Image 1 (tube, rainbow, N blue to C red):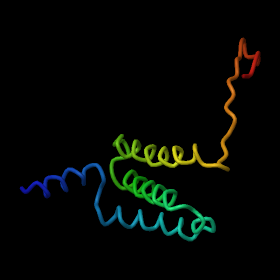
Image 2 (cartoon, helix red, strand yellow):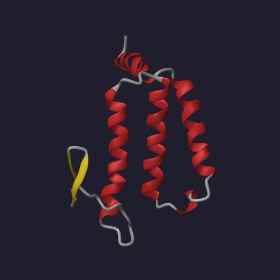
Image 3 (tube, rainbow, N blue to C red):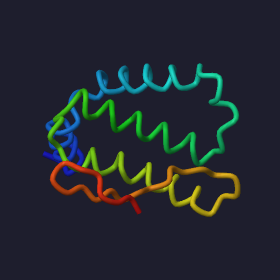
Image 4 (cartoon, helix red, strand yellow):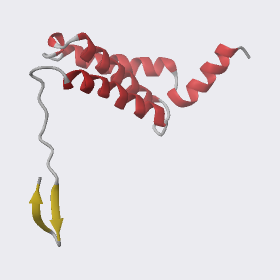
Length: 109
């Protein structure tokens, strides 16, 4: 068996059948492309969302317990977070730390 055939056989175990994966991935992306906000996104956001859709399709089509697929979803999201961290006008939630003792809120920082 050639190296390529070995790799493809291994990937099918974790990623599932390629044709089925392609169908799921393309359908997810079609929904994204049809949304009103898609055209306004920067290229980095579009690419990250497309890759996340690709990884979601792998998870749905292949082994949902294959950790690397989930790690990849986090990675592409983190790339956008990193970009937005230095982007003027980007927004975020205020993170607070709540201290609860005996079921009562004592302090919030």
